[in-house]
Length: 251
Image: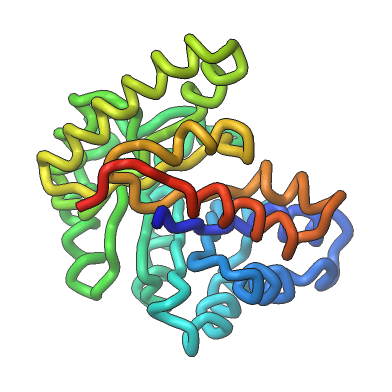
């Protein structure tokens, strides 16, 4: 079964808009776990606009007794503050994501260049501490081969292009999916696991869940947006039901 990791950033965004502790990130984590979510994701940014280091430590503590059945994934750019935090709490997975100045959300996967020269050493340091490493990349052979060269365990395919293609109709969606399937095949042949994330939702996930070798999807915005109207526990269950029907190739 493809694993679901629920990104709880948006709960922190709402809390921070008013200050104080409500709504509680820990309460959201508890509801997701109670609903059966096998993973929780947080993305602490340098500007602390949603998840904070305190949140990371508290979520790690809340999940400690539930691991490895519920995995903890920390994603973000490999700035020293984040890497130190990951070393401290030692999540199950760290997803390394490039960050562009002023961005609202992630805009693209890593592209090899001067900014990526340190990544092999960072990956090695994380893995030495028992943290599985995933690298956020576009769904193309070249960046996937580069990700393999860093020593990473997995790639997370940037799925916004698939989501936009899905909106344009079935034929366009299928062509995009086929490109992602080719990318997943390349990753598998290189010994990399395959994750997916960004703008996946209950509609496009029905197609994307069939991606060959898909291990995990990380979903936050669409899940939390729907939860405002139907409830968090219910919508986590809806996503789990969709993923339970996945038929992609498995190792």
